[in-house]
Length: 171
Image (tube, rainbow, N blue to C red):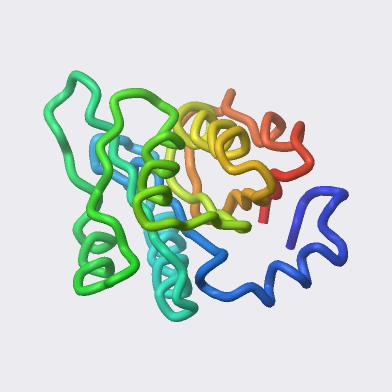
């Protein structure tokens, strides 16, 4: 279900796109973040990976490096990405917004996705910053934020900031 007013017929068009036009971006599903430890969220992210691979979509994994020791993506998610021609190695970011790394990944492969699905943690920090960056970096792309495959630890974090742009859909 889409939680925005611009969904309508556009959603039907997007569901018909093939893998060359679609991408899944996974944000910071690393054990260092308590929000990523929720079993339901990890299962929802795993389902997104499985669906993306079955449809031939590209899958880009972002991991926060920052100044802390690196912690990899949860192993049950990483294992789903093995032997996948259209799955990135983890791209290590040092700031909340990973969109420039996604753009660079796409430039190297001559990709220009029209539909980008985003999942991960935390919705009020890295997911929000990455979604805003993806909107800026990918001119006409629709960015879908997969609600059941996202999480946060702070009750103050809200979905409202995703509603301000017509090309950001909460699905």
